[in-house]
Image (cartoon, rainbow, N blue to C red; front, side):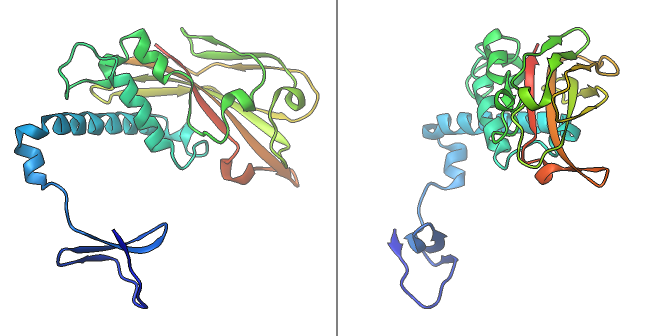
Length: 249
């Protein structure tokens, strides 16, 4: 690798040289690496093919989950949620101890306690983790998906971002089959509270039990708003909103 010193800044490939922009400026390197055809067919790259196949499966599994909860996720995620979730799915996949290497599956990993533990408590917004946003205990009824927070005092039990005047809570109950992609999400009515010293009971019951086979996944979301002239506006486009996968069965 060499640094390009020229008034002309270019990016791309010319003959056997590749020009690109890096942290240290414009750089140049020779073309190299192994051909795609060799990786695809050479027995020496069997492990590479297996790893690539499993990585693709884990990325797809993360995408299936994100799409299944898109209505919850839209305003409660960070800009690295995709690679973070893929990494977790890879750990879940490692809990599949029955499939051949290169064919291990997230869905099979989730049949084990170890696999489910890897996915449980995943925060979709790493900048607003549930443990720092909600400082009060809550309970979950896995049969109904109902989440309860007893005696919540908003200005005491929440990590409140500057400018927030109100907070909303919502629970989600998802049935998701990672093998087929079949899914059904049921959510609770939203409970919206002023951020003050009034004690409230927060009862979040999804409107129905999701149908289908697969895993049951439970979510809790906390979102902040700022009221101006009687209208509540999302605070900083949801940058401080928390969404956590609180249980996996």
